[in-house]
Image 1 (cartoon, protein in one colour):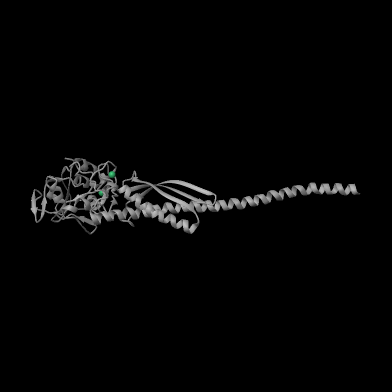
Image 2 (tube, protein in one colour):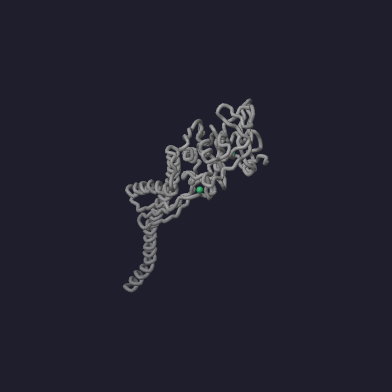
Length: 337
Ligand SMILES: [Zn+2]
Ligand SMILES: [Zn+2]
């Protein structure tokens, strides 16, 4: 009987043991499950923080690009190193954001703006940064490269170049979303000894940087309205010779980067004679500096070449025209001479 009881308890033990082992494994799994969950939650909040900082760079970047361009517009003074200035501005804003995070979220983090430079797209500025986030035993380091567009209508960015170039010659005025040169551009060109400078008396150019939708650009010469619409809207075009946005902030009329160009439009003429007539204050010539901003503002290499008149719109007695040399005639789809 005793023996039998002993055997029975041995059998019971054998039966119970797996149950105990199973329970132990189950308990361990539950523990691990909780640990895993915590890790998932903190790695989620770490990733959200990285995303949030990335989004903040985008918004702050647009605000800073606009505010630096506005500053140049108002002062007429170029930035000596636009990339360094924008990098410092953005680092300052991100340092504040990081400080807020540290105080409110109990995280260790750092955001380092490593460089500001040209994007492949001339209508964007490239911002490179590294973001480091640490929460509990989760750490995350990410290198980020972002293209900040300069054509977001919520952050309208003025073309800084005319304000710098014409400051010493009487300045410019902004009227109806256009930069009006009054007499200043003609004086600027005349001072440099450029022929037929006075064709640009009372000329106008684009104010806010907007990308031209008439692409391919040869469409501009297709009919009477395309170039007129482009000029009325103040559009900009990609250009290998035109200065990039960052160099425009430094007052450079040309630069080595892939950049942009816009038209500078002589004052319209009344339909009398287009041959060296002087109607009121406006001079009209058959030939004058080509109406492309990087040609007009190429004062470093004195590369302001002449173009022939292209009449693009006639409205009753009013003739609208620009001057273009053959390379730009071909680019915009006008007959070459
Ligand atoms: Zn256009
Ligand atoms: Zn440049």
